[in-house]
Image 1 (tube, one colour):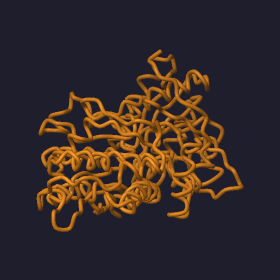
Image 2: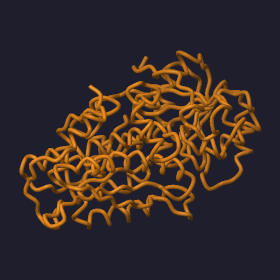
Image 3: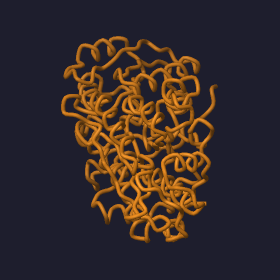
Length: 414
C-alpha cells in the first residue's frame, strides 16, 4: 500500500504520549524531539542537497502541522557536510557534524548523508553513539556489509539505514542494461577516487566483464583538477563503444562538458552521482544530452500516486523535486513512524529505542513499504535508468522533465 496524505495525517496524529526523559530524547517540558539532517549544502552538490533537504523538511512540516508525532513537535538540526575547500562534500566536516549530533542527546535520529564518502566518515561515530541515520541517496555497500561491521558499526547494531538500494545492485544492473538494451561490447571505466565513485565503478566493471564486455581500461578523474583533456583524448584513441563513470557532481560536471568536446557521439553513462540537477544546470546542454544514468530506487515521480505529493512539494518550495527528494521524504516518514511507535509503547523516546523501531518497522511510503534486513539494507533492489533528453518546454534544471525515464535496469548476474 502507498501512503496517502490522509494516511500520513492518521499515522502522525496525536496519540497517547509515552514516558519521556529530559536530555535523553523527547523532552517532558517542551514536548519536542530533534532530527538531525546532514547534507553537502556547500559546493558542487548543493543544488541537489537542497532538493533532498526540502523533501525531508516537507514530511516533518506536515507532521508538525498535523499535531506532531504522538503529541511531540519535531525540531530539526541541519548541518552542512560540504566545504569550500573540498568544493563538495568533505568527509572531515561530515565527521565533525556526526560528533555534534551524537553529543546532543535531544537528537534521536538523522537523515543523511547524501554521499558515501561522508557516510564512511560518520557511520562509526553514529554507531558508538547509538544514533541511527537514514540516507536517501548514499549507495556504497560497504557501509552495511557485515564484513565491514567492525569498521562502520563497531558498537554492533546497524545504524546506517537507507531508502535506496546499494551499488552492489546499481553498478551491476546498469552493466546488464548496457549489455542487454544498448548492446555495448566495449567500455572504458572511470571513477572520481571517492568512496562512492570507486565502489560503483568496481561493481559496474566486474559485471560488465562477466557480461562479455571488453573493458579497455580504468582510470580516475580528479575532482579538484580542471582539465581532463589528455585522459579523454587517450580514451578516444582506444575507441570504446561506451564510457562509464562512477562520480559525484564535482568531477562529473567537468567530465560531461569535456567529453562532449572530445568525443561527442560516444555512448556515455554513470550512476546517481550524475543524475543530479547540477549536471543539467552546470554542465548544460548540449553537453549532457544523451547521457545515461541511474538512481538506486524506483522512479515514482511519474506515477499517479506521487502527484499529490509532487503538488505539495512544488507549492512549498517553488521548484520540481528530484527522485532523491522523494526518497528523503520517505526517510523522514520512516523516522517519524519509529518515533510514533516508541511513544505509543510507553517507552522513553530516545535514540536507542528509535533505532530499534527503525530496524523492525514496516512503513508505507510513497515508494511502497519500506523494511530492513539485519544489516540495515532496504528490501527493495530496484535500479531505475534515465537518459538526458532536452525538453525546451521546461527549465534546464527540471530533473523530472530533462531526465527521461527509460525503465528498470535488469537484475541478475547473467
